[in-house]
Length: 147
Image (cartoon, rainbow, N blue to C red; front, side, top):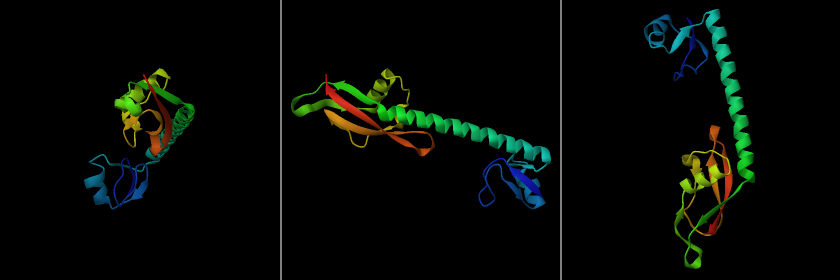
């Protein structure tokens, strides 16, 4: 029996694949649980249409990621913090501080996407990583100056 998978099934296929399975497996497990549909010509065309729509969304998201990546590469954030002797900060620069500085520059990012390798506790220039869609990462230069 030919089916179109709606979800990923281990050892059988991924979502959108057309697979051939035994009729009992289809009738008793896949179809009742909504994991698959019978591969009629209408369902095949519908699944191909859905794949095209999803691919367009992925392409648009990738283009947006590239735009954000270039914007972050040309940015040099300046964060003012109070410091004491030997250029040591009172506290440290956090992801929340970086998020606020990015908002002032017109870039909206969730602070959980910002990765600081080691705590920033001194004045100077640092590079932090920003996680983007699709596993991509972009470096961001942060300059900490005295308040």
